[in-house]
Length: 73
Image (cartoon, rainbow, N blue to C red):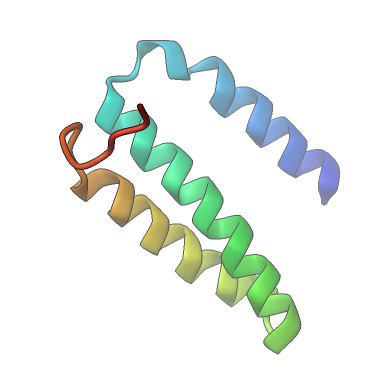
């Protein structure tokens, strides 16, 4: 399980150079949401359901934000 997650992370990280900023936010939002949702789901009963819901929510948040809304300076 951990090996599969590490492989997916490695494969997804290598493809980021050709993505625009919105696509990168979608991918990172989905990954962070899945991790957080999985952790919360682990505590409440179903980590798979939590990861799926968290990943979908994070990806949607990343896709729906614009460069002007996300300022890291």
